[in-house]
Length: 352
Image 1 (cartoon, rainbow, N blue to C red):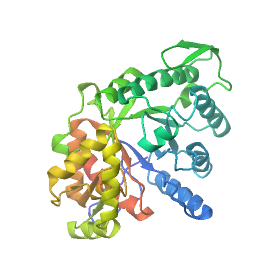
Image 2: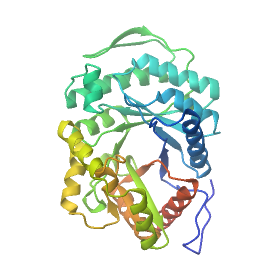
Image 3: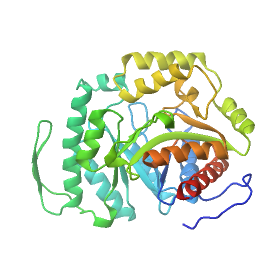
């Protein structure tokens, strides 16, 4: 998609300039709202994301959400090219079932899907499913799981595999997946075990970044092969950006208590890392903002400020080796236009 250049920084763009950057949005999660309203919201965000030039859209999974595969079908039916980035948790489905879902949806819609492998989840969700597997072992399981899945999708011959967690023998997948529709694969995980799993599977590791000056990307991922989850609120003026940010994510004591309780029982490396970052920032107003995470409104940092300030922060992340960005759920179509402007500026500056 071609890129428009704007002389006036107050102008917003309809299309996000990607260049070497891959951009995804996030599908609205189910929050107990009216069915028709939720479906409309999914359709709208899907359309906005595609028109903005995003590659795909992350579709969450956990015990409290609607099924990500059925939501992804709504996404596919209401777009022409957008690729659902479907969250896959081994405890929910056998790898053969996931492979069958990928091949069937790709066959029915001639659409490339993407897969975001998740090793863990909310502690209560895992215990309710009787999954007591330790943190690092969950990544060992994930490697086996994804290996079977990749072989099923990549080969027309039957697959035989025997590991610690899974065993299949002469397992065939029909319909076979065309090579050009083989899914993009990402892994959520900032821990050493998560990075090792990503390397073993040739997948893109997706992290929840600390401030750009503290981010260090492993050498093997520094050519754009690393991803992050981040929200962005940007306007021409810093004052307007912060006014909107404060209105959207007000102080919330109940949310802070919920966050603190979740952190106490979580074994997630990224959750604890971001929580420690909150304490270190001491409530100072920076481009890097953690109140939405701290108050349990979302699960990623935000970048807030003028177009120029946020673009500079993104440039530092690009220089550190990040090339894949999964944006938080967009508040509106207009919001994606402002985000587009920021990425255009970041791309222009990083290309100089």
